[in-house]
Length: 249
Ligand SMILES: Nc1ncnc2c1ncn2[C@@H]1O[C@H](COP(=O)(O)OP(=O)(O)OP(=O)(O)O)[C@@H](O)[C@H]1O
Image 1: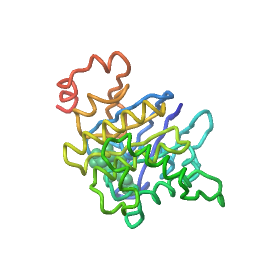
Image 2: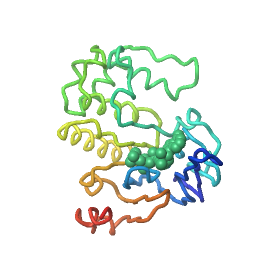
Image 3: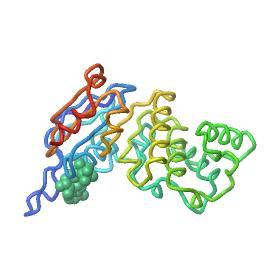
Image 4: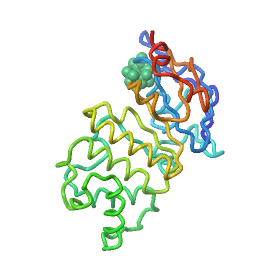
């Protein structure tokens, strides 16, 4: 469970260019909930995700994850629970390293310092099997540098790497924005099945209203740093794609 209580974030406080990006948001995100966030440019979506991740800290309010208050805990100390996939497929991986080495690095992410993970046959087999589940044929290319893959292939692998450790919360910040429609579709379907299989709590920011309609168990709309619509469960299921377009009218 993620509990956000009366959180504010003001940038450039006291200056002429002061901006209130998040204006007193309270939000409970239940375990295994898949929350979709929509909203126009500048409405505060990424700021809210950054606050959950700990990349930025709130000026007011509190944030708890699994009952532990993390309000002032920096992002690297939250990485035990939180994984994140960004818009740019280049940001989640090391391009010069092989797929296998990228998985090794990812596996080390949440291990105690000094604990090595050897690239032995068992690890290779485990990585191959995981990659095979993507159905992209990448399991035969694990010695290939990550940088030689397409954006869609890299995003799918980034997703897989992010859920292979103990992470329980997956934050997706427009993960398909840089992809062609076919690759975007593969990445979204991959994300959806990983979220279900690994029983993750997930937050997706998207400008794609078809994805917002198709995926997730709850949808919120943000405007000017506030939540102005919030539908979960049955109400989300009853939502029509045109209703979503109306939110932006
Ligand atoms: N580090 C920062 N310094 C100053 N202003 C910022 C900073 N980060 C965000 N902002 C401002 O806060 C507001 C909310 O930005 P945010 O990126 O959260 O919006 P968003 O809803 O994610 O937008 P988009 O859909 O365009 O990605 C914007 O006005 C933005 O310019």
